[in-house]
Length: 106
Image (cartoon, rainbow, N blue to C red; front, side, top):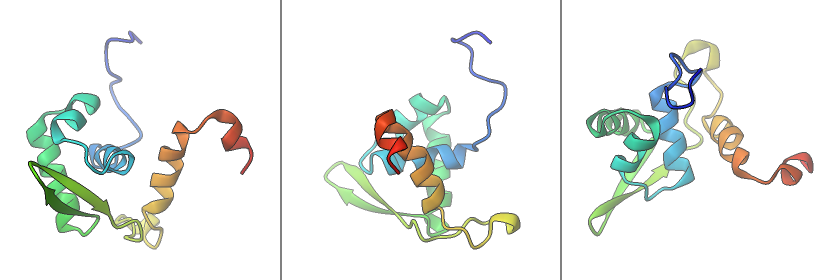
């Protein structure tokens, strides 16, 4: 696969990837998320609206931008994952930013 060409498919949906970017930076701008993920800003806005309506994300206006808060106790929606809080997914993927020796200590 060419490094400049995005993969044809991924294990995580755009909704999950937007949620992870918000978890990493609660004051992130939608424009930044769109650029990192490779989707339009309008699509990110639609996804954030979906997450807000489903009570995964709350938004607070701070000056000219939003600050997001995640409801990490909210459960996955798909029946086979129902009952598992999204905090587990967020912890798994946001912990990847830790230095390798910190991950081995757990």
